[in-house]
Image (tube, rainbow, N blue to C red; front, side, top):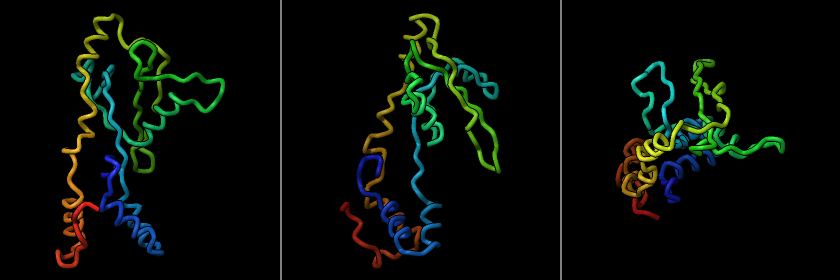
Length: 172
């Protein structure tokens, strides 16, 4: 719901846990906090694990770490660095995903951008990639999200709160 700039019962519950003054409440809120996901159209250049994906346009879902890498190249911190829009078909940059395990967790720190280069060798190839892109606005369509009431009812079920004990489940 927060994606749609609306109230979200889980976020409200986590806020109450965080503000209850206990370390247990804060720990629980951290465990169930909102996980940011971002989506981009990508052209798979090389995929040794799944070579059938090479040359295909796919939707790539990624988290904050990769988003930060994209944001850093688009909005450089230092004056001597030029901004790059990696999504530009003519002056963009391929992103090489390098996955490592660090202390038992997946880590993308070694992922990096190639130098600026056109996405493809000809206008026809660029047109083909353009036409294969997915509509990302579909991820933001209101009908893809449960209502506040549905989410509140599910949260109450998960927490074991009876319907008589629950607060009003209508949208505030």
